[in-house]
Length: 147
Length: 399
Image (cartoon, rainbow over all chains, first blue to last red; front, top):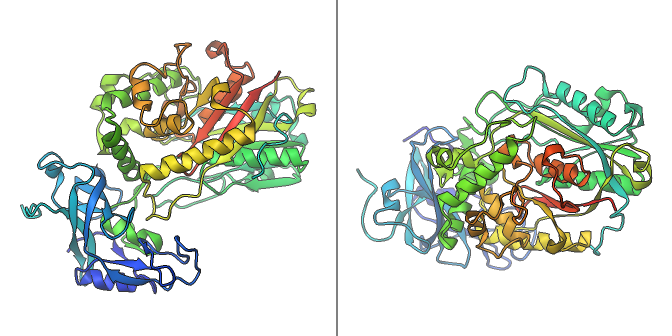
């Protein structure tokens, strides 16, 4: 457990965080047009309906890197620096992108090396009692998350 | 939008003033604003009682936890009008991104529409004593529940992801970006009120600067400062009776819409797609093309914006800005180069938002740049923020 900030689920997002607690990644889906939406709001960004009634469907958790950055100065409490942030395109839909921590550590940038298109899969960090936050690991089968 | 900015030769900037740019001045921001605005009005050859319009963009652009107070951490147009003791007929504030082009557009529209005869547009930027973007928040609801719990917070990580995408795609190097920052500081060192006056930087200093969020170094970020700038706008016919050569607002454009994303997620493709839309609207609105522009001033609150704006405006092909820079192509002392940071930008002045870009356009086009006066300066562009969220204004010299 840590002093990291935790999410405050709301009426719409509660199912997402409930699934995350079970280490299951879901993505919101508009019930009108079936588009997948990361960070759903009150309007579907694809079809424009004001009654999207988003439901959170499980996804594979597989994706590819689009970018990354090494945070050496955190502007929030509870994070040990440095750590790696990754911009991930999920496999389920073109340009469906999430940002999370890469748990392989900073060394992974050089070894095995990151590039645009590198496959990753979801992992979860238990940050508080009954709170887990999605993150990513390289999908090459090597566990670099333990020292 | 139907196209051309019809009053393109009828709204003019007729005077300005700029405070000293300091880290933590003794006086409050409101006091500095009043003095700077009075100086701008005097510079325009006017009396305060003639000013009947006030426009600003009062955003305090921080992700951190800071108490807000009008007159201290920001200065609204209402606060200013009240404390100057005038009775304005028009007061407005711009609330979007790209605060300088957004505010200039409101001010120019007000003049063109006859809502006010003389409009003061000002920008006042505060520097808190606590960490600018630091937050102690431990719970995040709303849109930030998708980002902050994962450690994605604040504008440095935001621009780092976009810049790394650019680097990976086009092979841009640290050495090229060093040239951007050195160019900004070189020009800023020549500006009397700049925080960096007489303090140019060097490639070595840039390359040895600490990383904040790789690949963004501390010197890729403008320095938080406190400072105020003010401009007076009026109609062309009124401008003819005032001391300085008028500089016309020829047209403007803002970006948007962008794709729905988690907060502060700026994929490079989003930036460039919305940026090219902005540029098309800018040419249509102002009636000029990039080939007519002899003084492009790109925004550089984070140094990668320089590449993004150069490419979005069509100053070079997409993916080529870093090469142009590496080949000396933005050296303002070379008459054949693109003087995109000749005013020093935010990196060379301090975090004055898009003011250095706007002011350089005004000074050069009004023939008031002193020792820095450029031989050719007839059509200028001042950019602000990111090409996908901000805006740009085209200015024209008289004649």
